[in-house]
Amino acid sequence: MPSYTAPTKDIQFILHDLLKVTESETPGYADLEADFTAAIFEEAGKLTSEVLTPLNAVGDKEGCKLENGIVYTPKGFKEAFGQVKEGGWTGLDMPEQYGGQNMPVVIGSAVGELFSSSNQAFTMYQGLTHGAASAILAHGTDAQKDTYLPNMVSCEWTGTMNLTEPHCGTDLGLMRTKAVPQDDGSYKITGQKIFISAGEHDMADNIIHLVLAKIEGGPEGIAGVSLFIVPKFMVNEDGSLGERNGVSVGSIEEKMGIHGNSTCVMNYDDATGFLLGQEHKGMRAMFTMMNEARLGVGMQGLSQAEVAYQNALEYAKDRLQGRAVTGAEHPDKPADPLIVHPDIRRSLMDQKSFAEGARAFILWGATMIDASHRNGDEAAEGLVSLLTPVIKGFLTDVGYDMTVKAQQVYGGHGYIEEWGMSQFTRDARIAMIYEGANGVQALDLVGRKLAQDGGKHVMAFFDLVKGFIKENAGQDDAFDVDFLEPLKAASKDLQSAGMYFMQNGAKNPNNALAGSNDFMHMFGHVCLGLMWAKMGLAAKAALAGGASDTAFYETKLATGRYYMARQLPATTLHLKRIESGADTVMALEAANF
Image (cartoon, rainbow, N blue to C red; front, side):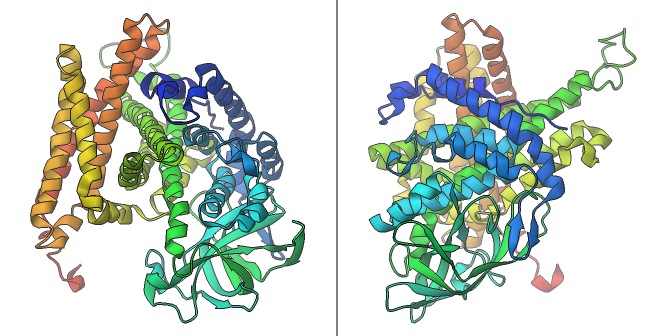
C-alpha cells in the first residue's frame, strides 16, 4: 500500500525563507511564527498520514453505494470525518464569528495540500463545503450567514455547487433548471444537475446545495442565471432541521477515479430555494466559489504529483534492476537499485522540481488572496486573478503527467492495482476537467485575463520578473548563469507571445486562441522559473547565514538548477507553436477530420 509523509520542512522553507510571512504587512501574518506553523503542519501530517492515507485505497476499491435514496461512503470515512471535524480542520481559515479559526488562506492552502495528497476523494467533502460557505459569506444576507455558516464551517452540514446539466457543461447559458418565485420570497427549483461532487452522503446531518437556475421571465442566456441556496432538509427558525426538501439523488456517476467521493446526479422537484445574492447575478456569486475551487484544484494537481513522487522515489531506491552503466555501485548485491540509472533520475527530478516549484507557486498565490481580502490590496487581487487559470490549468496538466512518470518508475507494477500507483493517475485526471476544463482556462487567460484592466496585471507580472532579475544580477556569476539568465530568456519568450497576440489576434482571433494552451503552459513555466529563482536565492542566503541543515539547502539549489536547465527552456517550443498561428490548426473542414 502506498505511503505518504507530509512535506512539512519544504512548506516551512517556503513560508519562512521564501515568502517571509512574518515580515508581511498583511494582517494576521505577524502571528505566523515558525514554531506555530510547524505545530500546525505536524498535527495535520499525523492525521493525514495515519488516518486518511490508509483510507485512500479503501475508498478507491469500495466506492460509494446508493441504497434507497441514501449514499453510503466507504468504510472508515465517516469516522475519519469525525476526527477531521473534531480537530477544527474544516474551519481553519474561516471567520471566528461562525466557528472558524480565522487563519490566513496561505495556512489553509498548505494544510489543504496535505489532506488532498493523503486522500483526495475524502478531502473533497470538506473542500466543496468550504467553497459553498465562502460564497454564502461573500454574497449572503446576515440571516443566511447566521442560518448556514456555523454548521457549514464545522462540517456538521456540508455543501455543494450545482452547475452542470446533462445538455450543457461550460456553456451555462443553456441551462434549463428553473426557479419560480413564491409569495413568501422563496423560489421553487425544478431541474436536474449532473457531476455533483458530494451531492449526497451519510457523513453530515444536512447538505446545503448552491444551485444555478433561471428565474422565469428573466433575460436569456447567461445573463438570466441566478444562484440559490437549496438545503436537503429545511432549517427551522430555531436552527433545528425540518422536513425533507424536494431534492434527491438520481444515481452515482461511475468514474475513472475519486471513487470515494459521491459524484451524483441530483434531481430538484419543486425544491424550496432561497436567492443568494442578486437576481440574474448568479455567476458573480458562483465565481466566488469557482475561483477558490480553481486554486484548490490546482493544488490537487500538485498533491497527486507529490504523493506519487514520494512512492516512486522509495521504489526506485529499493528495487534492484540492472547495473549502473559506469560500473556496479552495489557489487555485493545481485543488481543496483533503479535510482542509479540516468533516465530514472531524469524522471524523478522532473517530479521533484515540479512539486516543489508548484508548492511555492500556490502558496505565493495564497498570499495574494490574503493581501486582497485582509488588506484590500487591489494589485494583489488583479495579479492572482490573472494567475488563477495558470495555477489551475498548468498545475493540473503537468501534475497528471508527473503521476504518469511516477507510475512508469514502477514498470509493470505501476499498472497493477495492488501497488496503488494507478489510483494517483486516475484521481489526478479529473483535476484537468472539473471547475472549468483546462482548454477553457487557457481561453480565459488569453481571451479575457490578458486584457483585463487594460493589461495592467500582466504588465505588473513582467515588471515583477524584471525587477527581481535586475535587483539580483551581478552579485554571483554562478547564480546569474544558473537562475537569472534562464528566467530572463523565458520571460522574453512570454512577452513575445503576448506581442504576437496583440499584433495578430485582433484581425484573426483564431491566431490567439489556437495558441492559448501553449501560452498557459509557457506562463506556468515562467511562474515556476520565478519561484525557483527566488527559492535559489533564499537557499543561498540560508547557507551564507550558517544554516545547520546544509544538505537541505544544497539540494534545493541543485533541484532549482535542474528545473531552469531542463524544464524552463520549454518556453521556446511553446513560442514557436504560438507564432505558427491558426492556419494549420484550422485548415481542415470538419468533415475531413
